[in-house]
Length: 238
Image (tube, rainbow, N blue to C red; front, side, top):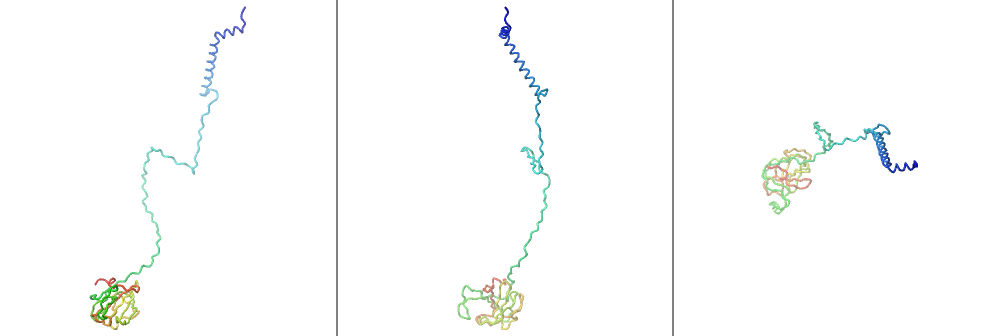
């Protein structure tokens, strides 16, 4: 009695069925690989979209300058530098009044200085028979020797002093004054006269009572802003 079909199939599978199943699995794998390969190469199936390149144009206001490669050689510019100097107009202040300077002095007479300026130490006065200061210098000269203005200026006083005799006082620039004493009784100038350097203002006399024991001479004093100064510091060398 023959076996039922169901039993025959079971026997077949028990004998050769394993190989059939293995074959079917291999075939399935091959078919799947074929379709996968075809889809990648565009032979069929779903195509893979290529990446889209997007070009973005930078705005001129916000453009970024290109960077220089660190290894790139930079060729120095051969353009000559601009050597033209720009002239600038500089505003200058208006010139101010020039400071007043001392006038030019000369010796009023030529002669030896026999008595010097001495306000810090006392010297013996032969006429007064005592020790006292000396406010000017005495320049030896014969009676009648012409006395000249030591600098340009204005005659401000012509008088007779109780001790120094006939005097002429001249005012100069920069607060300076010269006093000429022991002059002859009648000078050549009057108060208010303008004199130039070297003008004759009088002559040597013997009118100074306080210096009458000395040889004939001109007594010369100088002040700056009312303060006595040594005439030799302003007079030139003889």
